[in-house]
Length: 129
Image (cartoon, rainbow, N blue to C red; front, side, top):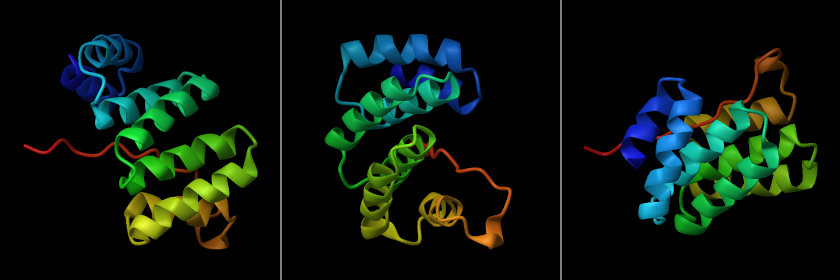
């Protein structure tokens, strides 16, 4: 269920993806990529507090995932929690400063003119085969 929900989120089918993610996470709550995908769904559906909760669970599950930390920074920034956004982005950078989402989001959230007009990216990792 989690894999199907994850795939639907990658395809932009957020409502349907959320249904399967919730079912899958209820059955197997240790799916780090599932929690991250659920956080992405909740950002896209405007539920920032619920996105923070899902991404916090994802970070608890895998604290070494720079993309998840980057997503958490984006959500905090959208919610106006600047200090938490900075801290989450620092955690992401400490894990992998060259990760594409971390690089892009750092530039966007700092207001770098090189990415003027860009929006932050939410990262959904590819599933390992």
